[in-house]
Length: 373
Image (cartoon, rainbow, N blue to C red):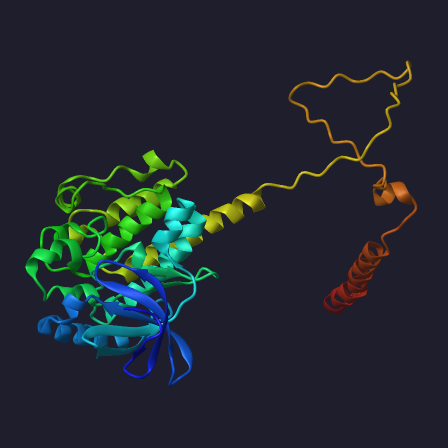
């Protein structure tokens, strides 16, 4: 398709953004609402298949109902000049795969916020009853301010209705990222998306994929049968606790993984908060080192007549007192004649009280023992 054409008398195609095995993405403009959009135009042989067109319409309708900050918004769907197209919100930035190819691996602090956003978007779709089926970094767009949005919900499921011989190379996306059950031809589940997220996490933190091969058949066998290399062997800076999370997500059995992307996201958030709290606590526990004030280089020696007492190893030598600190003495040293008037007053009151009882007891005695009786 050439640029500067009009789709359905509404969407102006302006420039090409990228292409894949099943579609080409263009930057366009919605002339009715006067806004920039992204337009994905599918291959002509897909568009001519009636079963695919109906399934694609259903999946596009379901995806359009997803409203989440980490999911690309679907604006419209249509057919023009024999080609299916889908209109989405336009997001400036690049897909995660291109970023990985240009810069290499991410640090843990850089990767976790993006992965948590991806889990939030895909987890929201899981709660709505949708499985992405094609989670990979090519379907994750990252904006200049590090916001991540997941795209292409439902397209892989729509492709399941076309020719079976194309499923291995097209339906489930790139074989590097599909789950063991997808590699075996079984229906995907939310746990399948979790596995694919684990592959993306592995690639982001180590700079390489857990499995590589020359064909999709070889990759399928590795996903189904071979364990991935431990991430810390490739990148020792990965914390052991995070490595355990990654290996759990890449388990061959779906029941051994986290069931949904929401669960994985919560685990990653907890790990991130725990790591941050530990780092802050370590800083708090470590007292800051302050430079001692400069002292004159004059060497002072005690008078010869003053003998220094020997100090045993078990005794504690008090630290020298700074010159600015005043010498503190007790109250008696400051004023030996200082009298605690409160104590004296209480003592006097007690004496008066006891002395006042003497006449009373004397009167009682004389009352019962009168003189001359």
